Amino acid sequence: MMVEPTGPVLEARNLHAHRSGAHILRGIDLAVRRGEVKAIIGGAQSGKSTLLRTLMGMITPSAGEVLINGRSVEGYPAHAIAELGAAFVPQTRRVFGRLTVYENIVMGRSASAGRSKAAWGAERIFEIFPKLRDIQDCIADEVDSDQRQFLTIARSLFTGPCLLMLDDPAVGLSPNAISELARALVRLRDDGVAVLFTERESSLMEGVEPAVFVMDAGRLVDVDGRFCVLASA
Image (tube, rainbow, N blue to C red; front, side, top):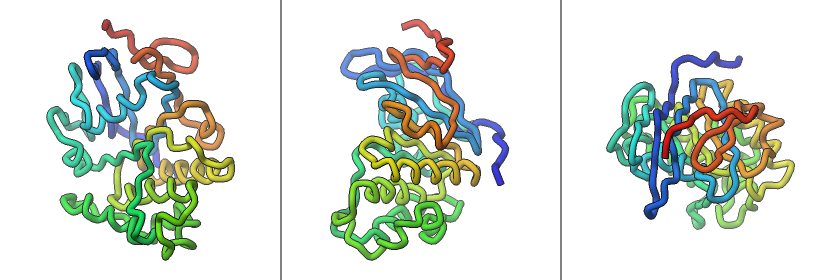
């Protein structure tokens, strides 16, 4: 059963960020609620990766604030934001290559150690990514690129997050894998997880049907072309 969205799990208010002296994020306002999926489309250098990294505490904003479940996370490092229930999957798709698929998944246990909410466990994750069950005893370095991407997402889910952020998760995936990923994101949405992902194109849109925004010069633009934020530089 689909979970009705409630208050924001993630909220950004007038968020600005600079990198190497360049003004990358220019007044971002964004909210993602429980059981809601939002997607941000943008090309290289559009600022979408910087946005996710700033939301996760990996880049310090120069102005504005980020809230997780209504709590300001100003000054929080990434691991402290993770303890509040946020999970971030970057583009790198790094795995522990000499460990098995199953061992990689349960490595997420350490990230959930400081949280009162129980981790999901491997069985629940296998329900979302069933092909990982079939290869759980395989060495991670030996699985194909599609399954490697599913594995990186699965490891982040072991923490039982309330918020999942993914940076370009469909890049390099086969069409079948993109369909599988779309089904997984829909399942997570229906389970009440707030999902925010970025895309260079629109390969995941049909299967997930998220609320879509375009990142343009550090600002978010909705699909009708209206600026959602018009903060000054």
